[in-house]
Length: 159
Image (cartoon, rainbow, N blue to C red; front, side, top):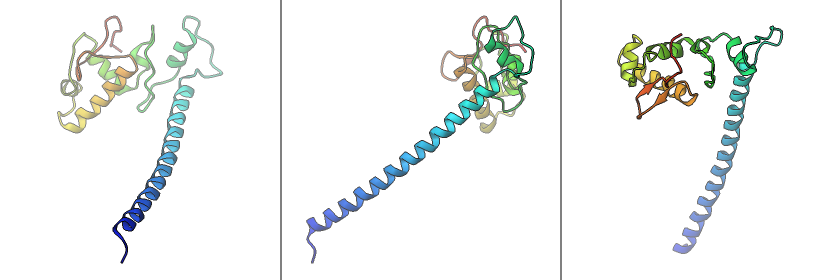
């Protein structure tokens, strides 16, 4: 009959092997994830570049030309806000959010959803929340208190 200590050592070895296998899988998954992050960032940068054959717009900086030269369509990357950049560079859903908040209101996501003509159901509200948070992370909106969104002074939200 095997000893208790022998059984425990055997189970410890098995657990250690399992941990090593899981750590290897985690490293592989993290590497794949990083490749996707880099690919997404690279595509975003490429989409933000001006068309190579287009005439330069003299009054705008290179970064402003890059963002304004492209046509915003649903699913477009939200560019980081910079001086002189208008909400017209945003995809339609994001422009609508900026337009609703243009008059200086501070709204939560439920109020935003209603103002956008959406049903006040969790799926729609969460979609609005996701877009508003993305606009905050890119500098277009501020979130004074958690869940309350507004356009920073001087930014203008109209389209």
